[in-house]
Length: 457
Image (cartoon, rainbow, N blue to C red; front, side, top):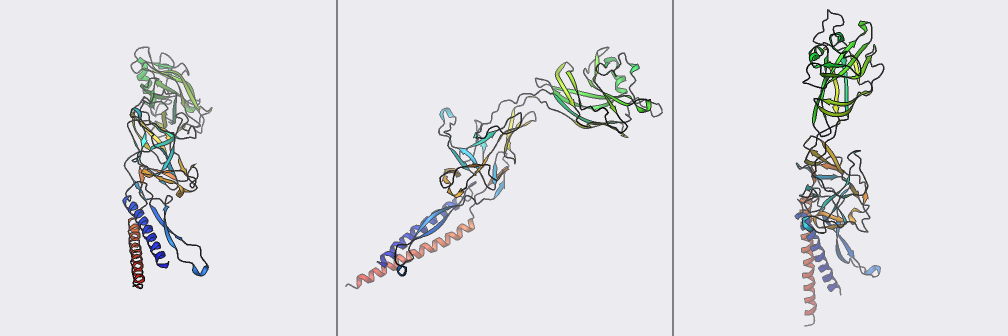
């Protein structure tokens, strides 16, 4: 029985080494496959029940050993929607159950992959090179926070981004303590101040001061520019708002350092028509160059510029946003001047950032976070069932998917196969030698059987 047992063991060895060769072949074939996880081979012995002194080395069986926890190298890419996972985690994807009318439908069976070569298809889905559709969590466009906790197949809409009316202007600046206006002269006291006597209507009346079209050149000569900002009306039309500052009193004049802010309401105004309007608030500074009382902001009701009604706008200064310190240039040093409105825009492109968010870029220069890509992990990664195209299915051995994997998304990158060609060639040589050695066992056993038969002749 020993000879026949040796033959059986040798045949099992040939089968096991053939199995190992098949894994090596597959690993080498997928050395360039994105996100591929190689399959190693482990060998186990099969020992028959016998007494201690009669135990044999036994036969052999080959089993696959997954390497899902071994990461491949991450390589940079020029495609905005490509991404790799650095560390632990998997993308959540689905495979369509059909394509009625040319559009995919899904049965809700979630699968998992590390293959991140996703690109937009004609319907706005992010699909990787193996045909798996990405799932993500939607983001509330108002708050910027993730809404919900269950990911769904993401479809990017190419609808226009609606225009947003300007409601707030952020404005922070320093006003030179001595504004070097056109009419200022160092030899003339108080020449840096706006002289209201030269105007038909007193422009320094907070809340009611105006500068007419016929008098705006005199007003410009006695004030300094405060910058300009483009705001947007409800239809998304761009409106340019020009600002000017007028100093109307000073400590040297026996009063307090006081300024007022104006905006251009009609660039073509003539005669007695209003050209510049007072925003309606006095800015009074103490000896330290700070506002006293504080002016955190001002509100303009029905802001209208050149016939365009923008609407109610609040100019926010924040705490200590407007100061008065010495400046040899005698100008307004604007630190912040921006607003929250924008025109309508069409979708230009989408990309993935390193926070794992899908970002849409529009023709109006705006960007909007559309969704967040969740990563899942498993307690038993190597218990996942491998499917075609680098996808995995959860099993009892892997456990269920756990949201919140510790890995991170690397944008514009791909994870390479974790196959090491040199290592596979080494295993190939060893496997070949082991296979050849098993064939020698078969040959030797055959010779021994022939000798046994010859004994009977």
